[in-house]
Amino acid sequence: MFNQLKIAVLIPCHNEEVSIAKVVSDFRLALPDAAIYVFDNNSSDNTVSEARSAGAMVRHETQQGKGHVVRRMFRDIDADFYLMVDGDDTYDASLAPDMIKLAMSGPYDLVNCIRRETGDAAYRGGHRFGNRLLTGVVRQIFGNRILDMLSGYKIFSRRFVKSFPALSTGFDIETELTVHTLELSMPAAHIEGEYRGRAEGSESKLRTYRDGWRILMLIIRLVRHERPMVFFGVMAGLLVTLALLLIWPVILTYLDTGLVPRFPTAFLAMGIMLLASLSVFTGTILDTVTRGRKELRMLTYLQYPPPVFVPNTFADSATIRSADNTALTTGYDDLLGQMLRFGLVGVVGYIVNAGLVEALVLNMGPLRAQMLAFPAAVTVTWWLNRRFTFGASHHAMHHEWLRYVLANMLGWSANNGAYLWMIFSVPLAYQHPALAVAVGSLAGMVLNFSASRLIVFKKIRQA
Image (cartoon, rainbow, N blue to C red; front, top):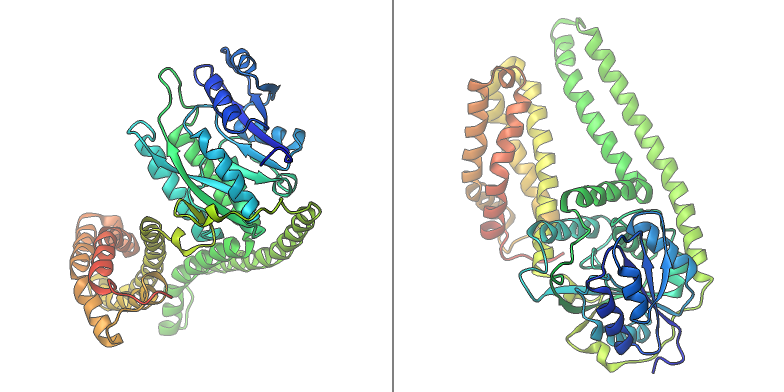
């Protein structure tokens, strides 16, 4: 079926002598008409000789890092479909024909293999948590059409590869591939496959914390580049909040006495507000620039013909799921999304709470100020959670609000208990109650989330 197609199997490698021969042999058996390339990345063992003995064509990339290797592969190889897989023998090669068929049945520019663990050694705990966290963050910011962002087993079309401006240098290249798909709204699909542990004697090149940090920093950079209005808008909001917190006591003093005794604070607040304005202008300008860059990438993408289209009834089976299908919204991803949104709502609640406390503390003291500020913050977070996090329940609004208040009494106790402890135990917190508010908010957030999800908004109407 594939003898009329140019299919390239691309295997980036660094010190994989234990497994590379088996990987090459397995893919040669699964795709006998494909050209198999092993791109060696400064291996110090027998990876090159093992790959050649197994029948692979070996190329070299001297700049260290998977991102450099992927960039070189995409530049040098010409094919109709590109299958990229890690050389550690953790993926199922027999799945490759089905992935190619799925890519042709769309046609799809990306087919991603969702990893299904088949052994305890497949994932380290930190890798599993980091993958889910980072994938969830990207899905929340750029779109929810991609699962298992860091999977190393993918099929690409020619127009995907030739329009991809690879800029990453390491394992963060997987994130860049995902964002490229989402930003150009490319047709994408998923297939589930086994993911097994490495062979004995083979060592992972992925460093959980170092590479996780690099991926997180890449996500932040991509938000700045691809969503500049969001990035600089958030910065502007934080700066405006800080400026208001600084200037509010000065305004109250001026209203009471007609004097402005704290000129340095007033000048500082004014400078911060100017920075907020500059941030908004910067985001507006860069948003226009980003649109132009996106249009240029789209034009490059459209220069290449679409992948070969071959209808395939197998693509409708339970093992293959389109990236646009609602089945992608798994329970875990929904939970992660709710946690992220609940956290953002908590930040808003903290700003409301802390702002009111700082505004009232000079006249009322920290305890009375908190007694007024906390109910206001609760009402704001209830409305935001109802609108954005969980959705409306089947209760009437006033009943739902009451249930929300009652269900969060445990969180309220933890919040105010931590607040009082900070006020009476930490002198700095007594002088700056916003610090005590932050500690109390963090203490109550976990309890608030669990109670809200399980009691108040358990039966919801999806937006």
